[in-house]
Image (tube, rainbow, N blue to C red; front, top):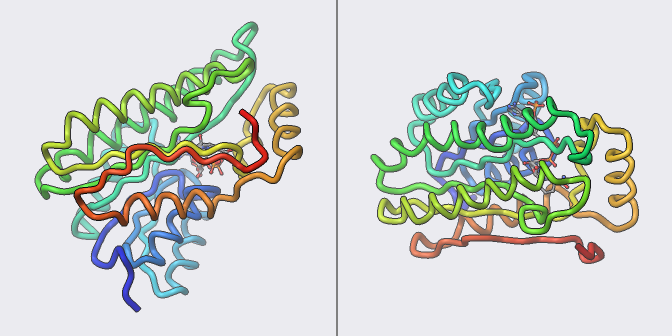
Length: 249
Ligand SMILES: NC(=O)c1ccc[n+]([C@@H]2O[C@H](COP(=O)([O-])OP(=O)(O)OC[C@H]3O[C@@H](n4cnc5c(N)ncnc54)[C@H](OP(=O)(O)O)[C@@H]3O)[C@@H](O)[C@H]2O)c1
């Protein structure tokens, strides 16, 4: 069977669950060799087995992307063991929502560390490799809240607005190097992301928003990523905003 990504190599951060896991499976199904990164090694090993059972190839690399050395190692190891890097999906993220007024400042630091600095570390490390190859694609996962601010989501909003700003600046910087940059902005997706929210009020609000509609599934977002990375080289899908049909804002 021939896939649209045969011979390509993709790195996916946050591949141990949700959107990252589904994306790794979808890219591997199109023929890409995938380096899968996150902190939970058991989940990565399990995913690598699932991909191998379907005839794909996956390299688990345990990584905390908030540690610059680990982020650098992810890129170097993937390049050394898989031979090249065509696609980096910066998906790892946390949504520790809650009001700014009286908010948990260590949650703020964690969101900035993972959602912004972690994404920057992997991006910084991969760019010299993509430039030397003369081709590459960076896909950054933002969200609807990267465009629309909402009470109780301010710092999460800020991190994803940051992701959008970083992505657009980078797109302009590296287009001359034949490197594409895509922003994916999902609405509500049913994943384990809300499990980590420390503020019980914010957690309840997120759970109720999810229950009130038919949410997106991780595979819906993976399909959008596959679309973006399988377009001809002269086409750069800059942004994809995807909401569940019933989501108003
Ligand atoms: N669910 C939604 O409604 C929604 C909507 C729009 C956008 N998003 C975005 O989609 C992305 C994926 O979220 P998800 O919904 O799929 O949530 P999820 O199931 O909780 O996945 C988050 C992933 O990030 C990884 N991660 C967290 N901290 C990390 C760190 N320090 N280093 C490396 N990996 C880390 C987690 O792995 P480990 O814990 O194993 O490290 C996990 O694999 C996030 O950027 C999120 O903001 C989600």
